[in-house]
Image (tube, rainbow, N blue to C red; front, top):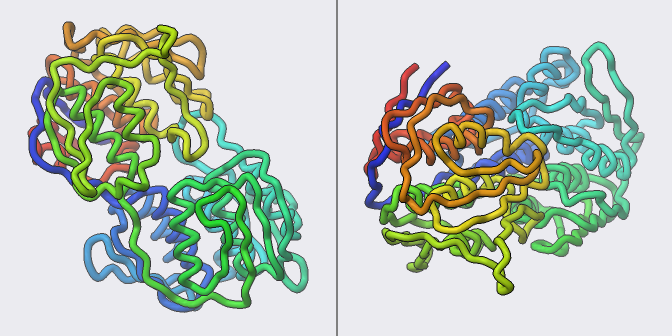
Length: 437
């Protein structure tokens, strides 16, 4: 198990560029299964989750070329249908969260797909009901295979059929799966209460370039006109808005001045203003964000003087992936804030590590934590920690960079799943992080 050793208390300075968006990459790479023609994707983040999904596709028979860093070409013209029915394939899928996104493309293209219970972060239950309900609304039948410990979805004779559906939740991966399955369904599929975050929008743009007609892009009401086949295309992944938010948080908690380059600012939604509510000044310079050094970061309160609540919500609300970062930043701001994590019941449990570091946090229940900021008057103490998931891991890294002394974070493969060479990139702008294998 690899470990980060972090010497805290160092300011950051200079310029850093976000990687390509991890969540978009998992969707658009899975979409390459929809065509037998070549698809080239650029700005692909070279991270563990993406590499594992690419290895999974190669095992399925997809030809993969990697001409340069961040650029991949996929051609799924000879899928190994025998392997796609094997116990080995289902077991591999069960260990990779992103594997849920190959279900829709396989179901619509070859007529069946196994849906294994997904692995990934230890942040609580991740329901698959929305995926299943949407795919079954397109005509798929479902049976449980006890040998493989997975569900088998089978398309009806003649293929999937377009339908109207109202999703029970605006699930991002659920919406993506249903969209991809609908691309070759007969007729028109209407999805209401669809997730409309930038990742789904980018997936839709890629599918349009592959020949699919999609109405309502950027909204929560989508209409997908099924077609008989999709063509190849080229697609560039947007910058990762979670990394952008993480870098904003790093600048604030270390009282640093940095520039974050090429952030696709117009696609960040409410993220910049959410950090401003913690007292962080941000300046937009074209498509860059400049975070100046500050002595004081004062948390907003409501007009009636009550404590600010920061909560996650479906897009264009605040992404849940940044709440852990914002919680850590708030520990060194002036004032109090209630962090309300609605989606996952185990995501806030990492705050015990922050309390051990001297942070003033009251975990009200699994979904809510009250943070009383220390206003940088008392530095956090160094600590030895284990990363339970990607976002908690990066939040712990922020805390360690702010803390007095040397901290250790184990199980950093969780961080590597979502952040490309994060230690090297941060050291280049002044951090002191050593990787120990």
